[in-house]
Length: 159
Image (cartoon, rainbow, N blue to C red; front, top):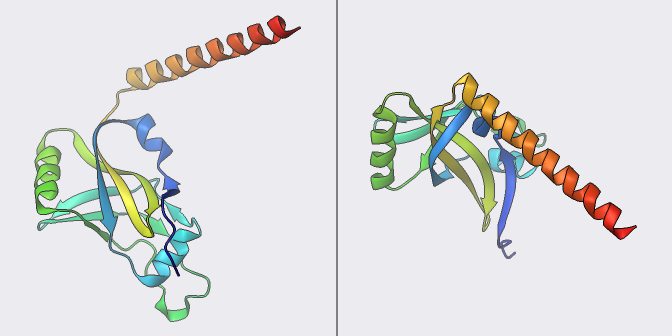
């Protein structure tokens, strides 16, 4: 059976872009068990409270919840077990250097299926202050108002 080509998003961490400034992103493979892959293909993964750590030359994702596969029986693993990310050694060194700077952390932004393999977009992030969040909300509101006005203006031109 041929593997499907292209990229299919499985889960996104929408909250991450609201809570953090994303400085840089990395693409990493995820080391998974068979039933975890099947469950993720069904979209049963949650990235809300997840984060990544560099430990002993490895990058591990903590608190990423993958629901147990219904037909998995005793092959199912712990839903919250740490998952190892597959990165080149040079990328791991870059991530470790980035995290050692004050205030920076590694946040999973998205999990997707790319050419039949589970991949994760990992962001080097720094937390936003409350006024930064308010500025972003104000910009989004202004953009939404402009789009609404443009749509209303184009409707009156048609009539």
